[in-house]
Length: 387
Ligand SMILES: C[S@@+](CC[C@H](N)C(=O)[O-])C[C@H]1O[C@@H](n2cnc3c(N)ncnc32)[C@H](O)[C@@H]1O
Image 1 (cartoon, rainbow, N blue to C red):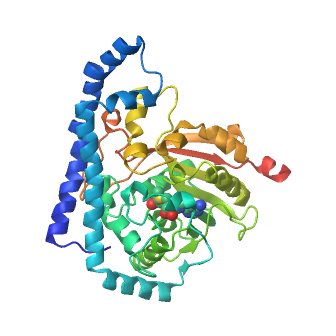
Image 2 (cartoon, rainbow, N blue to C red; image 1 turned 180 degrees about the vertical axis):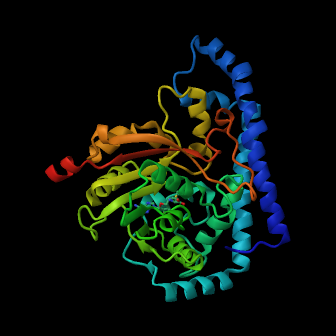
């Protein structure tokens, strides 16, 4: 990981606490503003309650408290990117050299320049990240991967632990509890970025070969070097798109994993990826998607509106539509029968000695706490044979 000097560390410390403060006490003011000011005004004007999260958004965008909170949140993202990028550029020669050395010797990186970046990834700088996941300061560098790694704990308020891998650890905890005797041999992680959450899976299932794919070479370059530096050898980082997994035969993998990936896909890409995942998954195998909870009729509209913030203020163009869709139906269209599907709650595993646990008051946190839903399926034996 890039090293931070005194000033960079101070900035990151500030941002970490600032984010916790924004999602806690300051964020809580949004509900107050809504209940005391915005909702009564809406009711007086329309003679009814809002019927969609977008109606709440339009009304709240006029409210002074919400505007202040929103502006500070946007600023915290921009400050996080400035700080990370500055730290990385200062030591880029050293980072590039280290990554190149690890990757040359480990054999854990396979790049394919013919893989194109999907347009939905290049059209905007995703969550204000300069160059998205794929850009770079110069040819063959690790700028974006290193920046992603060094600043993620600030964005999440430390909720993912010292190695930002609390999500992957939680997945492992869940799988070991669910199927204690299961020993998958081939695991595919789609959209791995730098492998934060694929590496803990490789560490937990030492007999398995983990293939971590992504379209972004810059992220993979850093991720493969990071895994090698950590001594994790049973994982390979391959440049490939989840939309075309044709290099792997039907039923090749025992487990297909995605972590915080689906919400960054276009409406066209997501069904293709789900279908490909179905095809390469072996009968009896597991598919597991870790995501923020989908919006449902049971989720209050105000909470949906708060969770939607990133879609409109943080360059997450697919967030709102993706979380608004019926994921069970999308999985069924890809081939997974409803009765093979399940959902479960997953909470990031954190090292409390480094960071205090993420807030557990889900009501006031609106997606900043590292508590997710796992949407998954065990691919049926019979259905796979018939298909
Ligand atoms: C939010 S990040 C995923 C985070 C990662 N799974 C983790 O656990 O840290 C989304 C990643 O998906 C990648 N991506 C987008 N479209 C893809 C595709 N069609 N195939 C493979 N990777 C893709 C992006 O390059 C990016 O690295």
